[in-house]
Amino acid sequence: MTTIKVAGMSCQHCVNAVTKALSGIDGIQDVEVSLEKGEARFTEAKPVSQDALREALKKAGHDLG
Image (cartoon, rainbow, N blue to C red; front, side, top):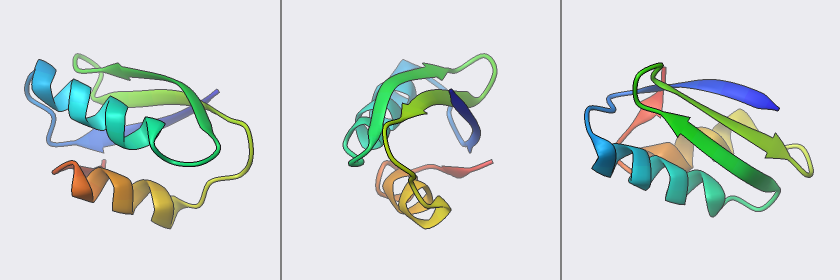
């Protein structure tokens, strides 16, 4: 599993937006987002670039932490 820090999450809506954004990236599976820890964990079925993660999070209103 890969773990990334996510900046700017403050509520359950944020968790849902980040989960949806990361789940929409080709190659990412089993997304788990923790508001308390400010992080997201997921399995990479194939390598995913930091740029792809950053872009998906930016569209959801967040950024890599």
